[in-house]
Length: 148
Length: 115
Ligand SMILES: Nc1ncnc2c1ncn2[C@@H]1O[C@H](COP(=O)(O)OP(=O)(O)OP(=O)(O)O)[C@@H](O)[C@H]1O
Ligand SMILES: [Mg+2]
Image (cartoon, rainbow over all chains, first blue to last red; front, side):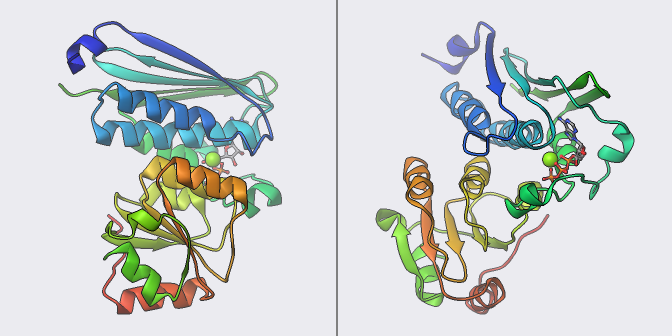
């Protein structure tokens, strides 16, 4: 089977992300990475999607009360979506700044809380949107073009 | 640099990855901040860290890091070792501090490559 055959139809996968579960944290991103590799997608693209997915997943585990991650793969692009149900981000502009973090001491002990995650997701993707409302939740969408 | 050479220079204990010691790393990164690592590390990098948790392996997985050195004599737990085996990641443990370990590898010719 050629890469084209495999990529002919679009594909969607959904993962549930639990708040505070640091044993499972990274499983969704790991599965996404495996799937993209199996589909024969360019290694550089796989790497960028994996990093973005992992940062977004860790943010949901650390900062949110939980939510879902969706990955849509079609022949032109990979679209990554993350949606959680709260607590939401008050000032998105501030959250997007390198170095800004509200991570707890516990998350910092695990090596997180540098305030680099969101800027890195933006840097890795070709298109990036984040929307958030306090008390409602955060939605993030990142698009990665597949060059052919 | 061969991963086997890293092991020798740091007088490190091999925890897992016997068959992968001939693989090479072209640069190294010493950090306890995983999101910093995720933002800067390129392929074929050696990761040195004082952290000892599953997120270190996850971070290495996302970045295709082929070997991890745990400093200050830290030995990862069996679940972490299991994760590394599944992902073909070499694990080493050295008594050196992060600073000393990085210094010895730099002296041995390995460089950081932040671009
Ligand atoms: N899903 C989310 N729900 C609520 N707040 C969030 C969410 N994602 C990010 N934030 C807020 O935005 C801040 C910046 O996020 P970012 O990922 O850039 O840094 P961090 O997670 O604190 O640290 P790092 O990603 O470097 O480990 C967070 O500290 C948090 O306050
Ligand atoms: Mg983050």
